[in-house]
Length: 308
Image (cartoon, rainbow, N blue to C red; front, side, top):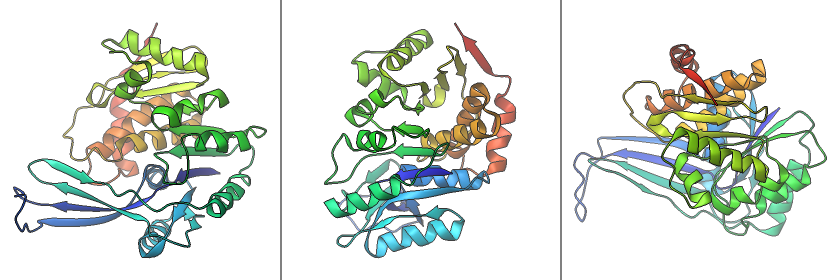
């Protein structure tokens, strides 16, 4: 079973405003309401690819009920902890002449709610996959993902971490199966400026020395690099296309990688599928469907290079 964890999920309220004027009344040209959060996005794209997953995390109030119901209606299994107080956040994304996001902080998590989530985590079994994605809400520290991995250390669980800064750093001692920094996060981790593919590989391998087993470095329109535990490193250019919406493209890449690796056990193909899924979502109004992802995959199959 594949589990995704979204500790601070949201309703994403997406509105289009033609030539927004701040300080005045503006009218929307369109509106969309979607369940949001990095782990949730991974589950949605896995579902689009025909793969079952279970979304874990915290939800509260009427917004939390919407998130849960919307996922289940789309075919994603859920096992959320229901919060006694507070409501799941609403993030507003304004698309106009410039794109503006207003992200809410979200509810605080109590010790008993944290304990309830940890009891669900303990039920994860050998050979399962757990995706730890995104930030943590109030009441949980930067070592919370590390705590989860400590609980699972005696089990053969493939853990994927898509997080930033100390939240990621604190997990490396537990040797996560896959981490997915982007190029800017990789630079920030080491306090350097990376200018070449060779330098990207060099610093990805430094993360391996610290503990990460496989590193997928996404580079936006410049493609991506994958450094795997068998010693190989791959580069893929990004496919050509009109970028419509980059929200969720990194999460889509994680879903694409998991989908293909579970099917073929092949790092190179999983990497290409990750690039394909991330790009397909960037080219789409919403998170990409299977046919969109597979169409990009066919175009990229011969574009992947082995790096020294």
